[in-house]
Length: 237
Image 1 (cartoon, rainbow, N blue to C red):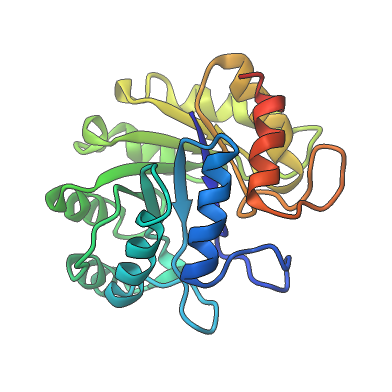
Image 2 (image 1 turned 45 degrees about the horizontal axis):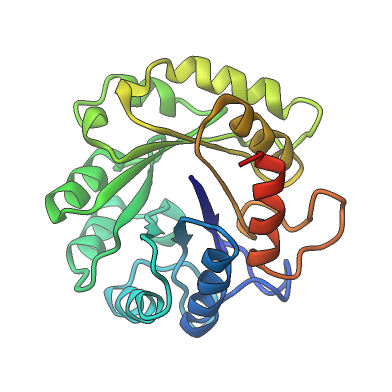
């Protein structure tokens, strides 16, 4: 599986190719799926470009994307979009249009409660386990771990010379991951080396403007579809 991560917390200052409006996200997702992506991860945005968990914005974004994209669509629940754990739960419980799945960063305050709320709503949980955090330890002892859709093994080491070693270390920390599928990915300078490792290990992965702005040859990517096409070649699938 190759997931496309459309935008993340990036803005137009990072790249003009980053989709920021529901229309741009839907168009970018459609092109990426046509290029070979089989799953979509998106960060809905306020009109000023900030990540949000707003039920209204989520409904507009998901409705438009589903009219264009024949693939599962997931969203973030990152604490930066709503720092207060109680307010984050209120936002999620107020969603009127539900994503297929949502990522929950296990090292963040309130992660267990957010994951439980999503599962109660029937939304699949992607357990985000970041390298360099205590996420793997928390996940190992979580009663919810066996119920998640998949584990996102997120390598935060952006040094291309050490990212693969960091990825292997994170996978070792995860162990059996409670038997859940693992999606391995990196970011910025570590994105392509970690994606290639995922291919060699037979793990799912992701690529897109959230994770990396440059193609493997160092050129700036013009779209998520361009990154997906290059990613499939590097992934070897």
